[in-house]
Image 1 (cartoon, rainbow, N blue to C red):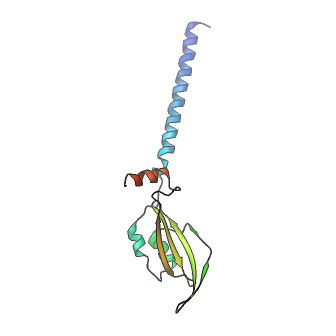
Image 2 (image 1 turned 135 degrees about the vertical axis):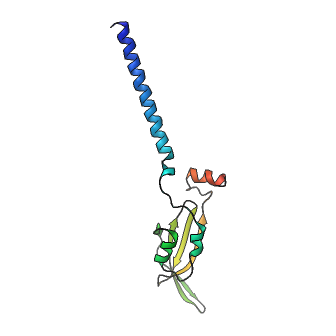
Length: 136
């Protein structure tokens, strides 16, 4: 092989490695910032404040902007004087700031609701923990 062919092959190989590096860096950047581009269910305290006793699950779903992410088995509690037995079906809505738990009675009406913020929860994403640390 002559000297020109060797130099041409090196340039071609260098060009392929540069293109591969640019493609990998671009792919990494897209994967890193992809969660920022995807639609997320943002937390809105006004939606939580709209929940009231006696609402149906459909009304709560409308307030919180989507269906429940999960639920637990129906729980029956011993009777309280003057109230009778309590039957509760908890359902959960997951947001970037935490979880909203809403308990429904046997007739499907809201009896209790609560927020569990996970600002330092171990299952919170690293991005969410950083944002909470920065106060954003």
